[in-house]
Image 1: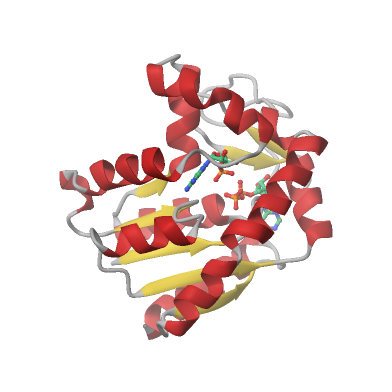
Image 2: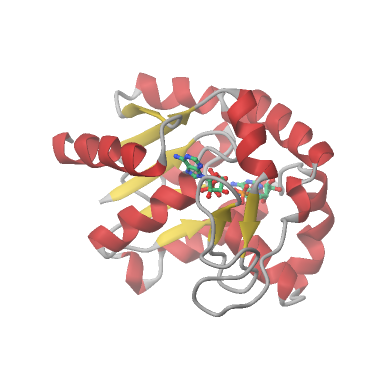
Length: 210
Ligand code: ADP
Ligand code: AMP
């Protein structure tokens, strides 16, 4: 099962990918998480991409494509995988064709107003990437990770200016991928507006039918 979760930032792709990946025992591969892991650990890649992530721009295609090609070549991807946040450009989607066999793309859609609400309330446990929302998916203890009890943070790119930039980058560079996959007949629409359990049920229905 090779899946792409496509959609704007804050649509709930990561939240749903975690659940679906657990159900099917396949890895959830988020390029954003990989970049943030490298930034947190101050690797050469992390130092190279930190200012790009903070600005809300995209990391260059060549670098991102090489990273994903390597990751998909690892043993744990042999049964399948969920790509979350990749591809984000037509060039990435075209490159992906040469090293994958994607037959199902889920496109998460929701209004800009809800996107801004989700991103402004998002809280993250830095080392694990576990994600909460202050209202819609709160941790058991306010401001603390459920598993470790450690502090939750606001992602630096969830600040208002970065969010605006990320949305405009999404509409310019990533939204055209909908047509790319529609033309291949493998795009499935997911209304990402309802509460998490409802979105999850609609994804399960799509996956059972494909
Ligand atoms: P993405 O991976 O698409 O950027 P996330 O999965 O991180 O989005 O979700 C963004 C925020 O919205 C998080 O704070 C998350 O807890 C919350 N969230 C995710 N899905 C829903 C939903 N269906 N309803 C309300 N809030 C949601
Ligand atoms: P995300 O966690 O998916 O919201 O991604 C956070 C940031 O990581 C983006 O704003 C980009 O700067 C970078 N990024 C993640 N995935 C990609 C990608 N496929 N191509 C280029 N940049 C990416």
